[in-house]
Amino acid sequence: MQLNKLPKIKISKAKRVGRGYGSGRGGHTSGRGSKGQKARGKVALIFEGTKVKKSFIKRLPLLRGRGKLKPRGPRTLVINISQLTDWPEKTPVTEENLIKHGLITKYRGEKIKILGDGEVKKALDIKVSTSAPAEDKIVKAGGKVWKKS
Image (cartoon, rainbow, N blue to C red; front, top):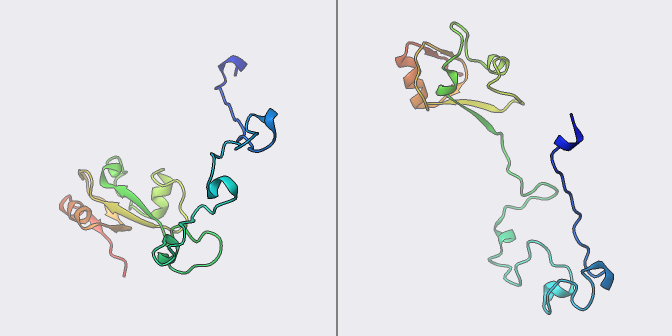
């Protein structure tokens, strides 16, 4: 590693407004424009004026605490049939084998689903959930799809 080969990294801090004339953002309006609510005080990011009945916040389900705008529910890890073209013969497609062969890097109990994008050229033994087109292609190629009950 050579110092002249390192990538250029420039991190500049945000300008603090209203800190005197010498700061570059001081003086009369301090980079906030001339008049109005945003020029005078703090305004919440989700503020929409006085229209409470139709506001975005009123339309959301009532959830309290941090992370209330984050998506809820388990994620689904998607694998296409085209990714299973070089899958070894007589090895069932399970969560453990998908991790072992590097098709899934992080697995924290999410749902795994195999979709039907691509072609199947060999018989596969699938032990994870599949979509209907993927199941049809696998069965047509002579493979098995195990249904979880």
